[in-house]
Image 1 (cartoon, rainbow, N blue to C red):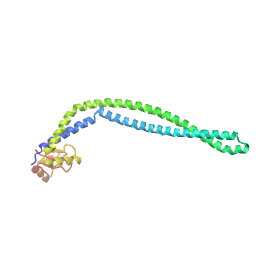
Image 2: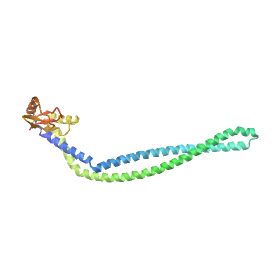
Image 3: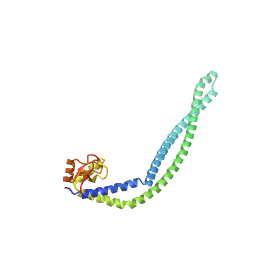
Image 4: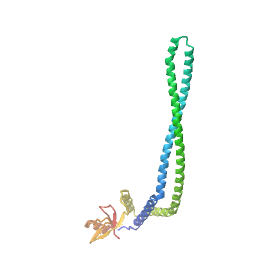
Length: 237
């Protein structure tokens, strides 16, 4: 019959560690920190999108302004040519080009004006989001400082537990340790190793399953066996 004392100590430490981590993760300040982080990331995402859009519009506006300048010069040239035309026929020949260039110039001017207005609004939104990020970061840092203080208080015990668990992994019966690790990977809930419960003339798992005669025999002979219902390892002292 194998000695279960070390694997049971390992399990006790594992449960304590999981409980400590669970309590910390359920901490109201931890949830606030996670919420602040998500909020910051959301604002940052919007901020980056607005900056990218403002940069795109700025580049587009610059091109439109250059095209408008060129179109304006072209209109001036056509107007001079129109004024210097020798007769009505020559002037009539210039009119389509003049109308086309003037229409293009007006369109480009409108584009520049509209883009500038859109950029102004984006800059206002960007400035607002910068303030939001700053405020969220301030709150994030405040909560983080509180959590760091709490972590500093529990860290020594956590490190002590983890150190002892490493020692036990090296010294515990290999088969028992592998069984424990495999059970945890398979989703068997803690505690993995549970003491057998008396059930009439036999034994039962803590989940309520009563062992068959063969299961009870294995439990007595080996000191432990697997529960077919909850998949825990049931042992007797």
